Length: 295
Ligand SMILES: Cc1ncc(C[n+]2csc(CCOP(=O)(O)OP(=O)(O)O)c2C)c(N)n1
Ligand code: SF4
Image (cartoon, rainbow, N blue to C red):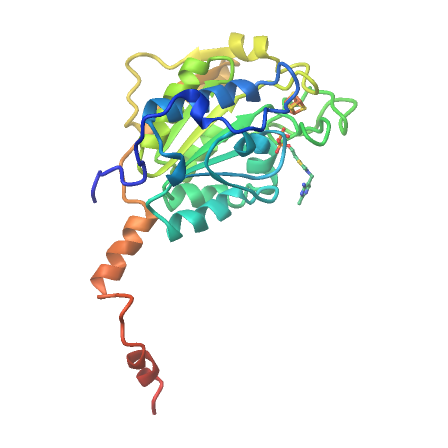
């Protein structure tokens, strides 16, 4: 396996060069503004060439992000950003793929796709914007909502326990898993940068508050609950990563930082290897296949 970062094409640009003419139309104070700033900073520091960048999203407030980033882009269907991005990545492994979406988008309707992006190690960076609510549809509980939260469809509080996206991604076999806060732009930018440099499926969960519909998971709550991983945390140890998440849960904390990273072949590399092994080429004589069907 080669470690060449062939999916990152470098240029020298300023943060403003990654902006489009469309100004962000999120509510004032929405955490998503911070995620976008983190993305601009990461792209600038990496010097990603917008001509080789594809920003793909699902549906929701968070999924509007690609409109604001200079790149090729697709605003797809609710929960389907991952599979669409997989198609793009396999067709063009030379492109950098950045995916954005919400907690409802990724872990409710899109929940069937998440394990396979991770286990297949599709080379893309998935930035989850977790506000623990459905924002665009005006505030229903999501799979990450705290049970006690009273929302549109749960006026007496919810009846289900939340799931933890990072614990899921560690279990699914994601080769890069990190968590950060939208209010900590520096950490967000750094982790997105490392995630984009990583060859494989990188998952960055950003706790992104929704001041319009989620009164309990506000910026202050996320900030006070965040707990940076210990300095001696071994990012190559999957057990240590899971332990850190479980311990944080027990103490009502949210672990932030790089939880886990490993190098292993991506799906496109394995497929290229297979094609080489069987001698595949665009000039292959298709009559040989037709001949197989002759009696
Ligand atoms: C198939 C389908 N079902 C339902 C919807 C309605 N819908 C639009 S956005 C959304 C959820 C938004 O919540 P989330 O994904 O958490 O993103 P946020 O808006 O909070 O960023 C839903 C259910 C839809 N667009 N498509
Ligand atoms: S509804 Fe919430 S998530 Fe959507 S833009 Fe407004 S603050 Fe952000």
